[in-house]
Length: 240
Image 1 (cartoon, rainbow, N blue to C red):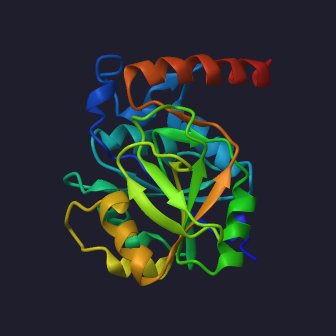
Image 2 (image 1 turned 30 degrees about the horizontal axis):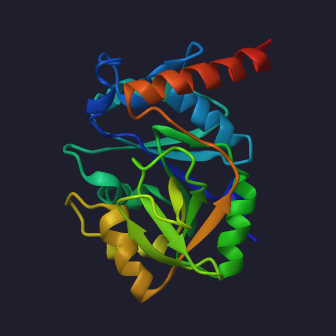
């Protein structure tokens, strides 16, 4: 059994955020405010609610703003891994390898939130003995998301650019065994979605955890507006 308190959470939050700059230009994308709080803070608070306590933030573009905001927080532990150049999703994890201490770790994108049960996801990963597990959601958001197909045992069978019948959306939330980082080249721009996962499908197997939870992301100005409305109402309701 994997306990959240023993699992590091690695959040990839170093991207340039070019598609959001028409709406948010003065800060890195994960720091875009919703209900008076940075989106990244909302994400971390949600994950910490399951018992996770150690967070590794992979920063890059305007990373000093993220580091300054979270460095003084007392109830959680934060470690920062800043990129000097964009390294992609896989490259960011490799760059943070020395900072990741737990044998298994949770990883996610810093510009999206999937309101799933993180403990159940850890249990799924442990029960399948997988080196990598992906959280998958139903394809409700449209064809702009890549699609993932799985077999009856939950093993991922394909990654595609376009939505396909019986395929799911990659929610950008993963559980990794630490040893997987050895498969990622150091210092290079490298993609989890197009580099690591397809190669691991053949070598060791990748499993998909299907959740009925909703995927909320702020990757574009349109999606940010939707997230701001949805999460803003949730925050006001909780604080009120």
